[in-house]
Image (cartoon, rainbow, N blue to C red; front, top):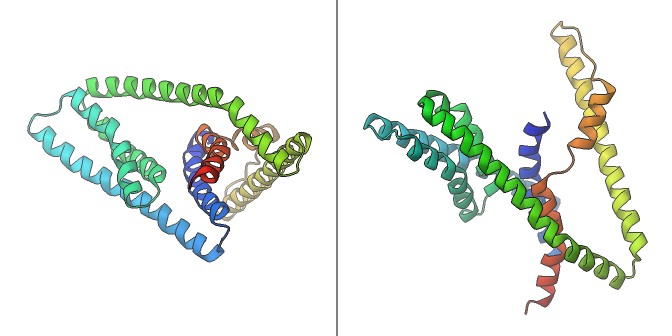
Length: 244
């Protein structure tokens, strides 16, 4: 559940983050415009990913009919598909991350790997595991290298605004606790809704265990992509302040 949730959490979080940064820089914010823009950017990115995946499947079937079903070629095309979806959506000023997610989900639902040769499935799984491992390692390595400078800039900006370091730390702790509390309430609401649906269907409702609820509350509120976006804030503000 946490793996599936992280796909949409990071994607939707980055879209909201984009609107929040724009509001902070311009000093203006409209709930109506932001809501409409969020829907258009999100839905547009999802549509771009789905359409591009259908186009990929069409081209892949044509290549397979003419004997171009070599595993390396198919794996390369599958690997490039999320990047193509991201770049195309960003060029159209839509959500590139949601386009990449929808392209991956559509590719999985289209059963391309299931219909491929055994060699393609085996090599493809190994390639995706390697890419996931390398990218995760690079993300946390880059974050670790930048974290000391970003923390210093954040403390300097807070002190310059009249806030002490301890006040900054207490604010961080308070926001984290509020986030955990909101997530706990949300999980309880989802559990109650699931029980109501089970009763309406005539099934016996199964309550969510406390340990599972605690794990979902603590384990599902952070992600490497979201963390990278948040840590970019001091650098972005500093760059905007120094720009002509």
